[in-house]
Amino acid sequence: MQRTDKVNILLVDDQPGKLLAYEAMLGELGENLIKANSGREALEYLLKQEITVVLMDVSMPELDGFELAEIIHEHPRYQKTAIIFVSAVHITDVDRLKGYQSGAVDYVSVPVIPELLRAKVSVFTELYRRKHDLERLTTGLEQRVAERTVELEDAVLQQRELTRQLQKADRHKDEFLALLGHELRNPLAPVRNAVALMRMSDTSADPQLTWCVDVIERQANQLTRLVDDLLDVSRVSRGKIKLRQQPVEIATMVHAAVEVSRPLIDERRHTLDISIAECPMGVLGDAARLTQIVANLLNNAAKYQNEGGRIELRVSPLAGDIEIRVRDYGIGIAPEMQSEVFEMFSQGERMPDMAQGGLGIGLSLVKKLVELHGGTVHCWSDGSGHGAEFTVLLPLMDAHEPDATSENGDRAKRPASGQRQRVLVVDDNRDAADTLAALLRLSGHKVSVAHDGLRGLELAAAEHPEIVLLDIGLPGMDGYEVCRRLRATHTHNMKIIAMTGYGQERDRHRAHEAGFDTHTVKPVDYATILNLVTQSPVL
Image 1 (cartoon, one colour):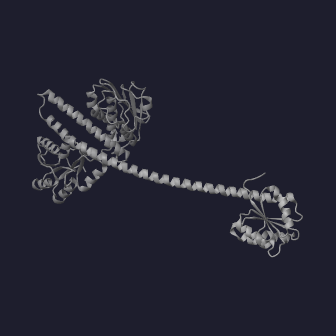
Image 2 (cartoon, rainbow, N blue to C red):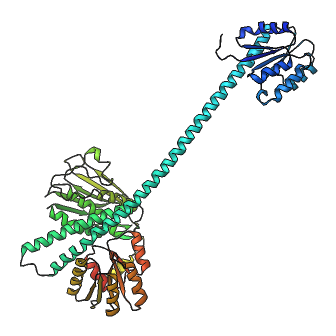
Image 3 (cartoon, one colour):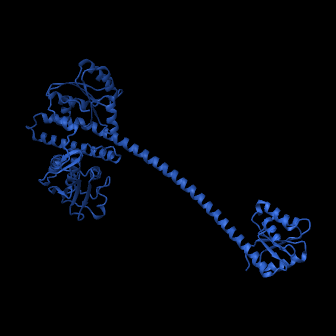
């Protein structure tokens, strides 16, 4: 068979007749046959060409076969070249051993049998080809591995860069949310203060004014909830929310959630049907966050159905858990959306009159808070137009678990002192400062107002206030520095309360380090402010 990848076979003998005989015997193999009449001539060919097999006579003048074999194998290029000795004289076992020691791989005695010689040579040429193919394959594989390694290294670098960019984007998102919360909460504070002032005035003579106050209050509360949900879901996603766990009576918590959601439910003229099992039911959790879970589910039910709808709230024990079910009869959830309702910003289909559809984060927050409490939440709907039901399962607290009351709960039980306080309000938002001061004066307190840090320090030095309501984001000297200077110069028992639009955990930590007794996030309900003014510090 003719091959295109012929190999070189070197025939070495000092007798031309033998070379012709070897050429005739091996011609059928179809390889390149090279003839050399001496050892030196053979070396010249070896230096110029790639030789696969050397067939040589042992007895040659000047340089015999043994010496030539040793020289060939000393060369790095030909250490594995197949050498076959042909001899009519050196055929003893000692001769064969010497041949093998000099580098030969086989020994052929004279007279040479053509078929045997061809078989031996073809074996070594085929081994060479296979070895060559394997080396070529190995080289190709090594090259592919090297290329793939480079690709993987590039991919890793790209992934690291992408991760870095995502982390940077996440930091920017958190900074944006903090700034957004601050910018939204600052104008909300004076709006709610103004509403509280109007509530304290006699508006009964003007029903339209009363209606306007109700509208402003509802919308301000709705905007406050949206801001709180947006920042809460960001904090939960980053693991920044820590639950203040204590035994919570479910019935009490559910009624608190209904009270939170009642304005929206009443505004949309829904009927709320509540059923709570009469047996004692408690969970170990954060009362405020549990209330938030149920309130968000009720708000969701109120938003996603036409006015005058119906909402069912069912609470009962179930196999070691507490089951809370909230059902509405509104727009329902399409089958393809039911797996996505707990994702961030997922809202599904909106109704034309759903002006208070929200941002699509309430259910996402519900899922995250439920999971933080070791529970699960599921939704079910027969499809669009058939309403929806959300089921929350929370681990039932062991009845023998000792009762506990939070630190804040203990403080909340302390009665207000009712004592007239000297209060200093420091806020660069004049509307927020002036409306809050007006409310505090109506409550019987003596109030001074400053709109920057330096003026606040001057008033504190002159009037020695017992309470300082201090904004953080002041121009020039910020609230942290004002607080530090107040602590350094005023040794009497002054309570300093931070009032700010920044509500992330690091902001609370900075406030604590600066010396604030309490950190509040705008807009603060006036009842909370009044309680802080009249109670001992909440650290």
